Image 1 (cartoon, rainbow, N blue to C red):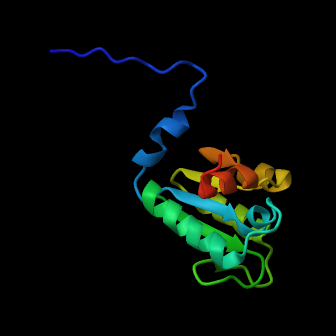
Image 2: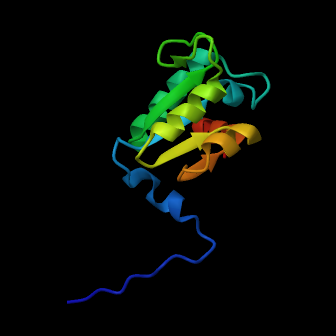
Length: 132
């Protein structure tokens, strides 16, 4: 017995259709300071981490929420290294698919080449707050 399968129109983002089907091994590298500053007033650090954690559980992804310097609980602090350098290094280490969340064009150029998906900071906040 065979079944007919309708393929989506070409303008449909296929990554969006499969985003919830990834194993927990899908890493999402998040430039936290960039995301925080994508909305005025800026989102508090703890609130951002909590919203990302809730989103990650529903999407079955593993977020790495990277902050320049110290980080709140649940985030990754980079100490003296910049978050951009940390994220670029981490992206180069990953063998598995990953997403990159930043609006920083330089960071996208450095770390986004192997990314399965690039998401801007403002678009990511809209996703987290349900207004996008």
